[in-house]
Image (cartoon, rainbow, N blue to C red; front, side):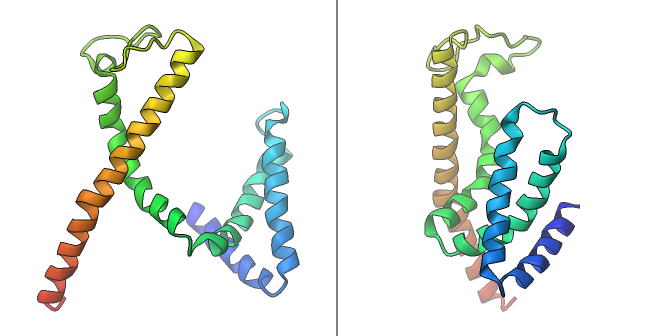
Length: 161
């Protein structure tokens, strides 16, 4: 379903490129509808569905404006690796949460021995977790994915595939 929504959003965007003002308006509507979601209204309301439609219509515009950005491309290359390594980072930082037959409690301490029980401890753990996840995904990208991709390209070019 999401691929179809993306496909139709791209078709609509191609029509909007003739009129840049309309494309800017759709992108602005996305932000207005999205910001309205945090208004305390019930989950299933007009703004929720409007934000989904506006997001789908605004995504091709956002892609067009950011596709040549080296920073965004680098971050995009790391998103799948971040997904792959985050479980290992959780296990590395908080091994007690994966102990057999144990229950994870608010007082479980992480590798840094910071309690989750306080708001400051929870924030510190979140920052630590996100930092280690990003560093791990960047390391995987630079030291594993890029060399393996180069080796694969070299092998396929040698085999004339």
